[in-house]
Structures are given as structure tokens and as C-alpha cells.
Amino acid sequence: MNQESPFPDEKTRNNEVLTHLRDDGPATADELPRNPNLQERRWMGTFDVTRSGTGSSKSRGRTVAVYYLYGDERRAVRKYIQENQGFVESCMDDKVNPINMGMEDYWWQMFCEEWVWGGYDS
Image 1 (cartoon, one colour):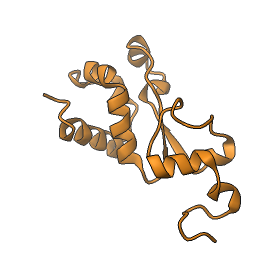
Image 2 (cartoon, helix red, strand yellow):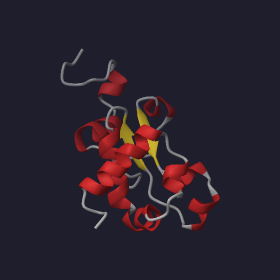
Image 3 (tube, one colour):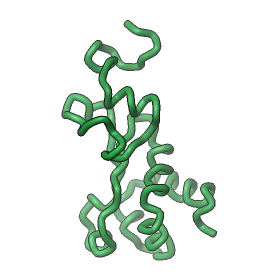
């Protein structure tokens, strides 16, 4: 087994999508070399709060989804905020908003930390 790669078999070790996410971090669909297939998706997550289908999120428009390898959640949140700053900004002043409605507590905590630490809350 190749010690440089965390992926257990040849197909995943030499996979261009997984390698891209490992080397470059979370990415939008446009940044990936191609659309991920089912085999690849077992290693990765997608972060996009508007896909939860709440009415208030749909009325604010769609956002750009971010793909990430499991374990890289914080950078995925950071990337999501960067890619969708206008949408996130329009939500953060509302007590109940489409971001915190469909999100588990640990994700929401991380989201708020990145929003404040990234200097977006000024």
C-alpha cells in the first residue's frame, strides 16, 4: 500500500477527484476534474444548506455546493462561506434562517466560528 495516500486500494489511491480534494481541499463542482461517482462519494460529503429544501432558503436563491473529504469539514464550511458570501450574509442577521434550520449543532457552531473568525461579521 502506498504510504502517502490514505485511500486503501489502487482505484481510490489514483482517483483524480479524491486526489484533488486531498491535495487542494474542498472544492465546488466546477473546480473538480469531473462529477464524482457513487464509489467516490462514500469518501466525501457535500455542503450546501439550500439543498435541504426549506422554503426560506429557496426564496433566497441557490448556492454553490462544496465537496469535501470526510474529516475536512471545517475547511468545507470556510469554502462555502467564501463561495456564497452574499447568501450567508443575508441569512446571518435573522434569528431563524435557512442555514441554522437544517444544520446539526456541531455544524452550526463551526459555521458561526468561521463566520466570526473569518471577519465576515463586521
